[in-house]
Length: 266
Length: 302
Image (cartoon, rainbow over all chains, first blue to last red; front, side, top):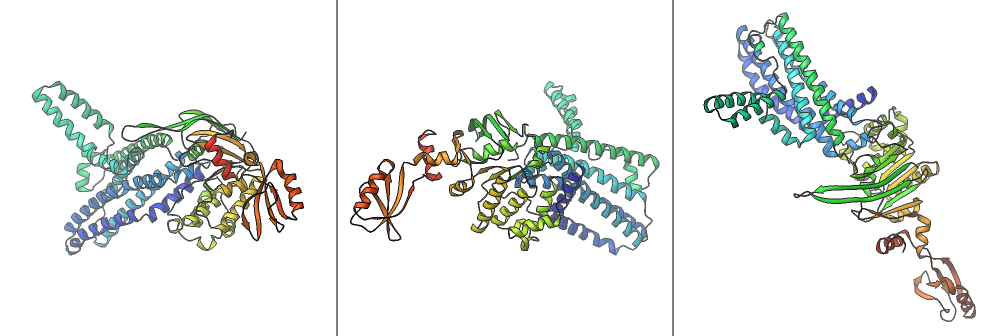
């Protein structure tokens, strides 16, 4: 089984490497990122460069959070659309192994992207002679965990609905939207005391609880993000965020497998 | 039995009003070990649907399928003994010809030696294209890759969905010979094809489907004897045509015609009298195409 997983993962890594849509998307993001990087070259002082470095790290994370989740989505929608999964599952290779390879290959590419970004930040701090803060590494790892959660969620959605609908769902029905919505509904319910609003409040709260958290640490590491200084407790929090990402990925993998088994692959 | 299909029914919901479309209706069929079974029928008869059900790619609404005595579970161990060639060239287009052959081989749980892959690529004239991505290959070239992935694992049961589509005549002949050889060596083959002249040359049994129902399941020989009620005769020279000879035309200087079975000896006597030379005389057999069309028109007992 492990051999089959590796065979499929290798093939899917080739898919990511040769996917023109992904390459094009990555190049566009890199261009935007590069243009915003130019002003930094004009700064002279160490403090302004440190500030710039922090902004760059944050920008790169945002860039990865857009690119990485597309990996799983594209792999699933492209293979299901091309109807070539039937060639895999009509051999002694269970659909779950193929799906596992989809998740694994996307996570590996995500890891490579986040590692490259962390290395870039470290190299830049050396070049600019800005003291490297462990907070940069912390943010890179935290960003990787967030990307993986979103990647898994989007991959599972792509298994159930059309990829465009999956993207729209993630854009409009995300954790932060329901977080704000549940407070708005609660405030409206308090002022009007309507029973219908109470039901809406419960519904918003339930959906909010069910949706995956992209920023599980949230305000707990707000200070760290500003100072980039990491304490022992922060690393423990990061480990918990990693555990959450692992559990969320496992949950979405099981859900996707269930959906794949019920899909007509003919 | 290698494949047993029992009371299989498949229906789909289509359109805005989710109208029910019956693709297969109570189809029961058995494939014996060593059979070369051809699934025939007009477009929309349910041939591909039946094959998908046999492969486990489609869940039937009712009935059951057993392969090697087990219900097919996608990706299960029993798929190690079989191979499938899809109708449409649905391959991994981002891989090169060589990479795809190696990948499909590796899915059988064993590493395909580069030499094995190379040998098959050479045999089917694909060696010079091994570095070409499948996305850039023609339909026929992709079909050849499909054929290779079918043959890599020396399967005991092969499902072929329109295998000759898009192939050049040389490859058709080559593939036909490979299939006949595989069948002789004990492989069971289930083929779905519209090219009846090809089916006639390779298949031993046929199952004819029409509008989702199985209308006939017979040996090719017995199906073709349906119309064997006459002799095809070629004659030359003589004074006039012999009695009981139904002239049909001319071919290479000879007169071609038909003689009814019960009038054969009367025809010979008349030919001797008129000094007509008989070039050839052979029992007329209906082609598979004629038998197929007749079964579709008049039913299985026509």
